[in-house]
Image (tube, rainbow, N blue to C red):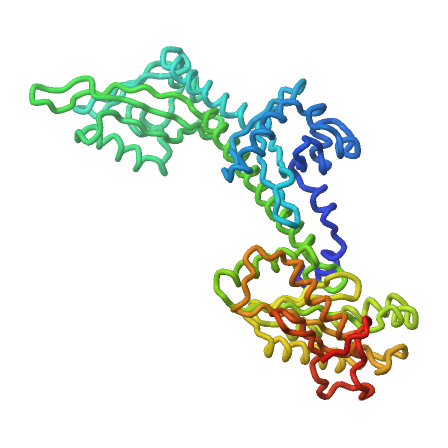
Amino acid sequence: MNAEASKPYLDTVSPDEVYNSAPLALCLVDRQMRFLAANESLAQTLGRPRNELVGAAIGDVLPAVVPLLTRGFRMVDAGKPLSTKLMIELPGTGKIFRVRARPFHDADGRIVALSCAMVDITEARAAMKALQDMEQLCNFALQSAGQWIWEYNLATGVVWRSPHWKSVLGYEADEQVGADETMAWGIVHPEDQHQVRSRFNRLISGEAEQFEAIYRVQHKSGRRLWVLSRGTIVERDERGAPLRVLATSVDISLQKQIEEELSATVRQREMLERELIEANRRLTALSEIDPLTELPNRRKLDEVLVRELRRRERNGSSLALLMIDVDHFKDFNDLYGHPEGDECLRLIAGALRSNARRSGDMVARYGGEEFVAVLAETGEAEAAIVAENMLAAVRSLKLPHAGSLFNLVSISIGIAVLGPEARTTGMPSDALVRAADHALYAAKQGGRNAIALAPMRDGEEMRLLPRSDRTGPATAEPPLADGTALP
């Protein structure tokens, strides 16, 4: 399914659905150790309905996690990374979980909760334990009838094997195995013979003190066994040349199977973690986009505005903020209905976005019929041009509006610009928004379909920018609501 075909479906997926359907147990825990959110996987893991978890004290459900999360809050508050090796055992189940946590920030950037994921590693730990047990078993098996010993005579090229070797391969003691049982490498799989011979030659040449090789042999049933062989030189001639090698061989097929199963478990866990990361990425994206206009929402705006203010402080550049409002939009909804109002907002969003295309520009939906444009490295003159272009773009939509003096849908814009000389260290982002909002009010009072520039320096006054080719009645600019005339 291509991106365009899947888009209608993606639009119907809510962040809650993405979070709830994640294949790992997820939850959000606040500083009071309460569940703020929990998904279905966690509810199933804990054996409790999901709606009972939300708001519940985590100490009543998972008391073993409380010390871990308490320590986690201390670590993130101190700016330290969270450990990825936190493990708990779920009481009464014997299951072991690895707990991973990340700090969760509110809109102001404060850490208010920990977002946690619980990964069931019971099977992986059991597999690892089985692998360790198998290694011990192999050491014991060297002395048991289930293993075999072999001796290789370098002078004759003949190998002798203890009687147990045939039973390991599924043969009776009197059955023939291969064309010549005395050939040293006759039972080794053809594809493995080169590496086995190479390792053996390193022992003979003195490059290695011990021979060790893992290779495949064929069982009587036709299946392949994995064999580990280890050996060393036990006899040399008077000149020190090797004469005899003594070695042991052990069937490690079960060990290899466990390794493969463990690898498969690890691959599956990695896949689930990638899916979780993708689910979180999509959740973040969905939480920052206004579903109606597909513009960034107010939450994203707040984040970008704080970032741009900090960048401006470092670079000493200008920053402009445009507060935009659709004129007489309530009347538009009353006249044409809310579906037409929604379509009107979508079209206006597209027109605004088309006039803020630089990498440092962003247009967001502020709420209702209000939009905000953030223009990085933009002074008053450039901001006024962008605002004028936005007004023209909305007028060019030619959306009828019988409730407007202009008979068309129009917008008003308030501009607030921080110049490079302005000192704003520590200035809250909402101060710039308030300044632009006051200018927007002035633009509304100035007859709408207008642009006003907020005073940002001492001695400045609110300025209503001259009309250019804007349609509508050419009237004198009316006074503000408090009776003060606009300059």
